[in-house]
Image (cartoon, rainbow, N blue to C red; front, side, top):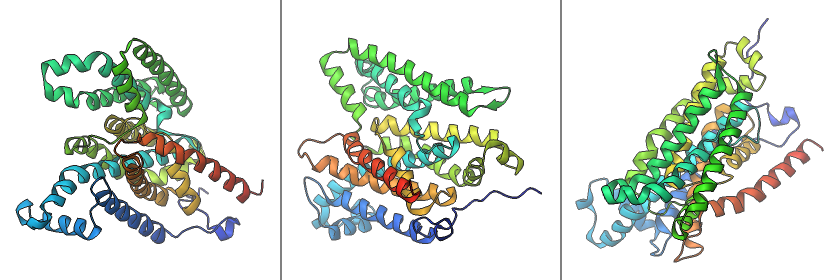
Amino acid sequence: MTTAPPTEAVPAEEAGGPARLSPALALTGAGIAVAVAALLSLAVGAIPIPPSRVIAVLIQSLGGRDAIDPALAGDALVILDIRLPRTALAMLVGAATALSGGVMQGLFRNPLADPSLVGVSAGSALAAAAWIVIGGSLAASIAPVVGTLGLPLAAFAGGLVASVILNVMATSGGRTSIVGMLLAGIAINGLAGAGTGFLVFIASEQQLRDFTFWTLGSLAGATWIKVLLVLPFAVAVALVAPMLARGLDAVALGESAAFHVGVPVERLKRIAIVAVAGAIGAAVAVSGVIGFFGLTVPHIVRLACGPGHRLLLPASALLGAALLTLADVVARTAGAPAEVPLGVITAAVGAPLMLWLLAARRRSMGE
């Protein structure tokens, strides 16, 4: 007799592990973290603004710019035109990256899986390097608007091409192989890395500086146009994730077991990869490469809440939005008036945190 796979984490008390947070507490805490991070992002900067004035501006702006108290006009300009789009972009990128990391780890049944594993980030980096070294000056001379948006659009196109190649190489006879996907991702990473290395070799000093800064990740220059560029892909992966949760829990038992309990494994894999590729391609396009984030955040949630994807995925999205927003606050204030690259902040925090999480896991398993 076939039994349904577990879709929730085993209670910690039964498993003998550390206490887990309940779904209500975990999601409430993550939601509060998002609100606090957003408020800090809007209040902290070169011009500090008290949180009470930030809240007043946001509430009054719901009635339009004309409804804002003239005494708050200066604060409103900073909050609505400079900090709010950057905060929104940080939250979208953080949520999309962390959620994609959770999906990838579930799909590959490997806690070391990362969105960059399938080559989307490398494809975006190659296209970005090509734009900076070859295409930027040409486009700027033809159309200034294209020149402004060219880098994120080129990076997104590079990620899209990489995802198409991945799908073609990993699919045969209507079946998508996880091993084939992994090997294809490694090959795409290697090929894109070679192309990027050549472009770096022929780049001028200024082009090299521009590309290096992009690869380190940054939300500087955030605009509502960039927010709109990443928004549909972040929303798409957020809408798809709940439908993938039960299937990812079943896949943890093996593809064959998942198939026998009624999970459409092939469709699950295709939807997951398309959603992750779109979200990561868009995120990398507007923020550059942000290391360790998609790998670390799902681990934090898994340690606190357990492995069940019905809670893991939404909690990862909320925590990712909060943590990347806080990281961006640190990035733009720690070295003021200059900005510390965002990827430096996430790697500096994420790498030691991963070591701590691994040590905590070893202790919990009694190793």
